[in-house]
Length: 397
Image (cartoon, rainbow, N blue to C red):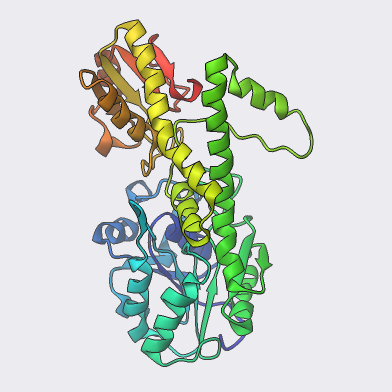
């Protein structure tokens, strides 16, 4: 980064949940954004300019889209990034069974290297293990380009902290942890995020601290949710309402943070990030917590089956399929996991699905058709919906 001025153009690699937030945020600050994504469908949706066609249905993106879309262009071609000096990498590192797939980050390094200019700043927002940004991005880029790290090639890690569906916490006000592979990289990333993007920043002295902080945040949540879920099973046996216990404990104004039970702590982050930290630290607590989390859908399926059999219901509709209530994202959905467990417990049940925000996983086109078909509706979110009288709230089991 040759001077203290803000970039006229920013390249965001990855046009998904994280990348599109970054693109919209930068465009709001008057920066032109090139989004690179391997999906032609994602590129087409972004370039259409049509707010309703966007694949990410988040308030911050949708509310600002019409005012920023002229500054955002998407492509599948890395060659269009030639001449750019500012990059944010926002690709996934998905969990596949008991393995984390780091190949998307390695692919970025391979594809980007031919078009990098000397002095470029590459910031990774990719969730990664401590040392991963250096190992999987910085060193491969340096080797491919011949650029010396922290002198001719600046690399930093700024873990994403987005809260899906939130209108309170957005890229405008979420504090960003920043770590660099060296002092020049750290300084450049601070300037980009603080001075150009206007975000609150918390610099750290070691890039591995930034990487580890993200894993700690989500592992902390998984540990506590799993603990409450374990207590729910025990309290159910002795006739205690775990939610009432949590509410009572929450009256303490210090030294306590409430967590509530559920069928599974899902989503793209919590299970994967906890697994990543467990793998790198061999944490026994995380291993136990993940076991509790992985077996919780079966517990909820068993609770549901008792209610289903008491009512003599055979046609079961699950209304709401997101990873949390009202969410349009089904990745690692607790509902889908409960459905699979319930099918195993009673193969004779006719189980179908509906979510107005997730039509590709729904078994009905219309809500009215779905509700009229069902003997019993299992609701996940959508508390404002009138779904008849025979409804079980999955959150309240």
